[in-house]
Image (cartoon, each protein chain N blue to C red):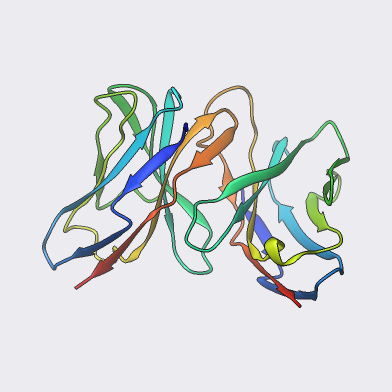
Amino acid sequence: DGGITQSPKYLFRKEGQNVTLSCEQNLNHDAMYWYRQDPGQGLRLIYYSQIVNDFQKGDIAEGYSVSREKKESFPLTVTSAQKNPTAFYLCASSTVPVLHFGDGTRLSIL
Amino acid sequence: GENVEQHPSTLSVQEGDSAVIKCTYSDSASNYFPWYKQELGKGPQLIIDIRSNVGEKKDQRIAVTLNKTAKHFSLHITETQPEDSAVYFCAATEYSGGGADGLTFGKGTHLIIQP
């Protein structure tokens, strides 16, 4: 089945540690996105990539980094500079303008 | 930039009754308005969308209406069923063939269907 696969489903981060969230898609979509979801706050765009080897900052990029070396993959690194990383992270790809989401990674602080 | 307000934040209805969720937007240039449904522990999924050249769109038990003058749009769910329980997000953007990065989401409505 075609879709977006996010892993792991749950992730714990220690203080001062960088962690990487995986996102893979087999939908052959060019564009991919990372959103952060906090309770009662909707979805906020962290980074997006319209094509391989290119990506753009979204509304809340500080403390995060991404890479797009392959069309299928768009990993997100939550760095130690992100002081409030506890959230639900959603990856998506698009057949514009429709977004196709994965089932998310819940990141918590130890 | 665009600002999308969504109300109510929580809505509880009896099974079989109708549910209405309302959103307002600020940017008169916005022309694409999707609705996403998020079930517990899952990612959101598009359930219906509308473009600014139409006033209403229906798909079985769900419908969306758009009032461009007042800059608001609504989701209507009739004959609600237990599987309708979820969080619903509205969104708006000025879509001109580019990416979906311009989508601005509302804060969500938690719809609870009471048996």
